[in-house]
Length: 362
Image (cartoon, rainbow, N blue to C red; front, top):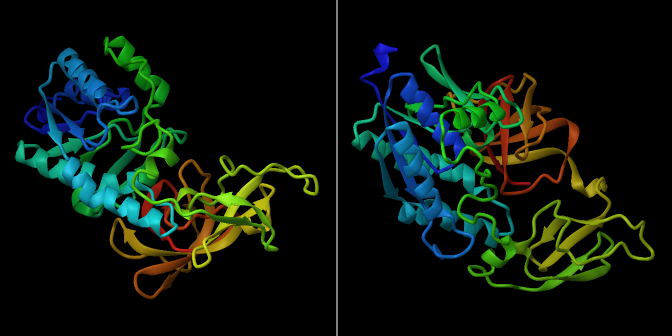
């Protein structure tokens, strides 16, 4: 594709197989490719859980194999100011934020994009499983063809300017094929395990990490009837639908079913727990969302049926949306949704098109 030879694309290379194959494919298509490794976290960088040094080594090795230049850039200051401070405020307020979404809109597609443009890039690319297309002068965010890997949920706060500069070469490639491509071209990280969890915490125990930054404030775990079932270490350390780490057995008088977190009484520092996965208090047919962001501008029509996700890896759920004041909306679902969690994002879809979303308030 000779027409692409003069187009410079800066690829965010994490050291993982997805971004490595992204860089490889763009190089094969004739783009002028530059790799950029982002370091977003510096605290306890020498701990067993922080893999950034090895990730950089892997990214450099792949860039060498592909034959592209790569540089490392440190966004740790921007990350702490724009993402981590929000993350702590939300947990302190008893909500469960999704920092990966903010990391995409503020770091990977803002600080990174700005830096790439300074390097002379006309486009940036990442290893996200999602798509982008232009329709009638507006850019749309699309689900990936591989539904099991689709990451449009995490990208729903991107704006027109960010999408206009973005490329997602893995959009129509299944994950197994990505690893095959990496093996075929001798990339050293072809079999590397995918990273999981929150972007800066890695595989470490989450509660132990959070307790470094937020104080513990023990209180009672109570049933809806007010019966005390145990003690919690602080409301910040629990999330709706949580089953592990409660320390409550089935109990002789109970059904033997597991216990789940179903709510937080912030005023009285009490954690509401219920027994059974399908307890009515874990199911909601509507939610209110704030801080809405619509990718292509206008708000969705209240007369139309859409689909939404209230958490990643959830099946699309049929819903309608009713606008409220102050950039808020009410989402009503045909079927009740499980463990709708304040602080998480509800993301709206029209078929394969991701329209945007907001932060769940209640």
